[in-house]
Image (tube, rainbow, N blue to C red; front, side, top):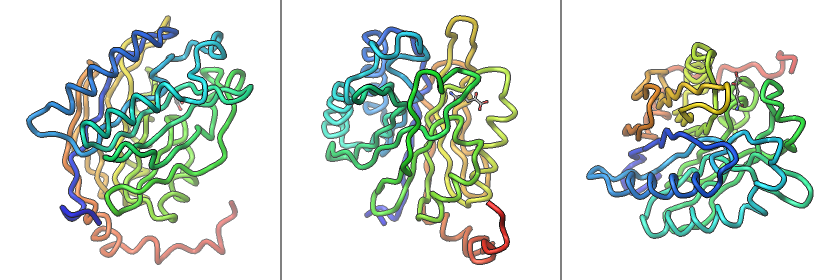
Length: 269
Ligand SMILES: NC(=O)CCC(=O)C(=O)O
């Protein structure tokens, strides 16, 4: 556990994203990262939304995606080292060989790549499966001496994935997203459910604004292991912050010993 006993200030950058405009998006993200790091109550961890470099410009994603994520990684690594903060860098469109992935990176305070993840479940309503390749590894990473994990947007509909991450030790789950209207009820309920059933923190950073006909509602959320919503944004661009304490995860798991009471031999998965 960290020197401060697992207490961390989290800031989620709820942003607009310009579809198909990586230059605009890089400039916006760079400036919001600086703004968040300069806050009087400086965060320990900054979180970005899903596919923030390109948005869902999927018809041109092969030409727009960041080759091997090099530009994004260089920018996030330099920022996290200079600011001395952890960055869960949302996700970006990353071109790797002939494929494009919806890829997330976590950087530690030293600017080192602490973890990476490629979205495992592709969302057909937004035609991801036609343009993107699916990932196949878990997004675990170390965070101040504890384990944390990433999943991306639609992944929250798959309780098996969140449970796998919790069983692997994750105490905080970070969820970059581009979750559009009208499914606010699903978004809120699923995030809270993942927190309650896995007795972990869930930190979700959604985009805001519009892209063509699609409207995004924001409502980024920070939920504690009891399922209490510590902070929730509205629909506007904002920096949403809350303090978390990873020691609470152990307390909740000791109070209601869900992980000891599981009967996996009886489940048909
Ligand atoms: N970008 C996404 O994965 C969106 C997922 C979504 O909207 C859903 O309802 O699930």
